[in-house]
Amino acid sequence: MTESKKNDISSIVTPSFESLVSSIYSAVLLNLGEIKVRGVDPISQNFEIAEFNIGLLEMLEEKTRRNLTEQERSYLEGVIRNSKAKLSEHREKASSN
Image 1 (cartoon, rainbow, N blue to C red):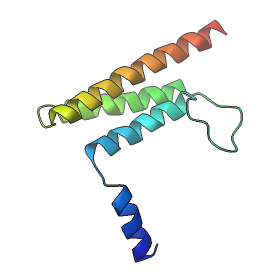
Image 2 (cartoon, rainbow, N blue to C red):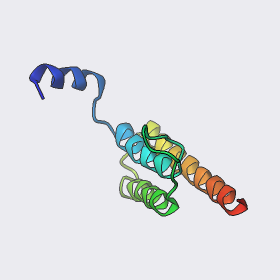
Image 3 (cartoon, helix red, strand yellow):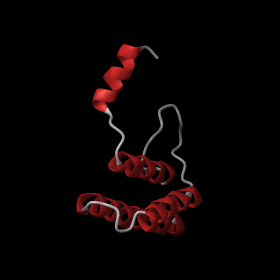
Image 4 (cartoon, rainbow, N blue to C red):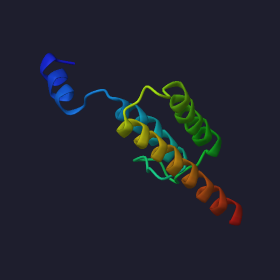
C-alpha cells in the first residue's frame, strides 16, 4: 500500500473502542444472515459463531469494567443487548420454519 493510500485511510478510519466493538458486532450480524455478502447466495446463518462473537463482546465488557467512558460503556451494553435480541429473534424464526 502506498503512503498516500495509508494517509487517506487513516484520515477516515481511526482505531477506537467503538470501531473494535462495531467490528465484532458486524461478525454477529453476518452470522445471523443480516449482512448479505456479494456473490454468496443464499444467505447463511451460523448461530454458534454469532453466539461466540456475542461472548467476545461480553468478555470485552467484563475485562474493561470500570475502564470505559460512559459513552463507551453505554455503546457496548447496547450492542450486547441488541445482539442477544437479534440472536433470539433469528432462533425463533428458524425453529418455526
